[in-house]
Image (cartoon, rainbow, N blue to C red):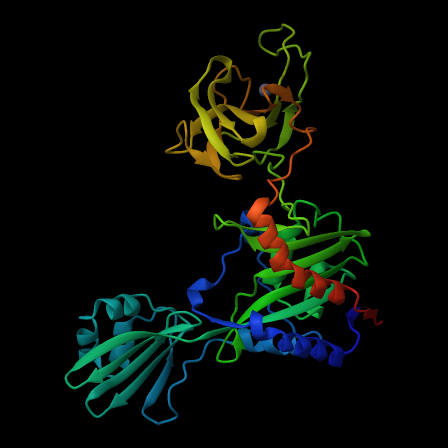
Length: 445
Ligand SMILES: [Zn+2]
């Protein structure tokens, strides 16, 4: 097992960061909850949700905080006796609950306020409905809408008034390091960071490191990230990661989060090169490759020598087909032996073609812009096809290349004003990351 050699050091690290928090700490409304710029991450996240209850492994400051965060959000009414905290049960409706407390009349009045009506119609089991009851029925009501927002209703004379209240959110800049012993997730737990933060880390380096196959004992990560707090407690969603370093089999990768002048957020290395490839290798989830790129293939139907200028991916009819890179739709329709086909033009003279499709994504038409990973059509066997498969072609300046072997270009690097802004912004993070990664992590048995 591996852990931070000494807890004090851990704390010292935090304290020293606190010292530099003047710039980094800010109060943000919760809706600025920074969206994650890596579109891939969503996919990875969805695929690997870990429902296992969080275990407390090592005692560390961050771990303590995390444990607090995973506790259900308790409504915090006054300690007066007339407040009732009701935990909503499965099958409960507002009507059932209000009947239970004999305040059904109040519900009729509350339903006059559209916002309250909507909230009460969508109450969730496990959440707490807090009600202040008086001699003439309901006086006040509170219901959490999110971790940082709740609805509050108060009686004012003979009617109710409602408002939503936002808690101020404080952003703290934190850091963590880990060395992998058995798994990345365990290393993350030992470092006191959430699974969601680990998944962000995976998303950031997914183009360079195959996390299923390449991870080795001794690999190390260092991250600097933001954690948002309300009432002194961290919110469930961690991040974003601002800077990360990952050493995999002695090769070190670095990434910094940056939002360019067009508002696009991504991760770049210290030279401003994107961490993403412009293309994903495979446009479809396939069962096998039924035909390879072959300039001298005998055609299975025509029985003549005809080059096979793409790759055939066997997959069931209806399997979604994704565009492998950002681009613009050049052609959607039927074209001879290709059957239903989509052609997409990408930056820098690249284009891709997807053939034998059963149908197109609704709304797809010439000139439409598409993003890497967007579904554009579905596998079929239209045109000259012996069975359901996707025929995929990859062209560079009009010349066919083997989609399985072509060197995939990186997404565009930062340039001009973006690059200088990036350098200025990431310089302090780079220094911090270097210090962090030179700190010793010891091994215990
Ligand atoms: Zn083919």
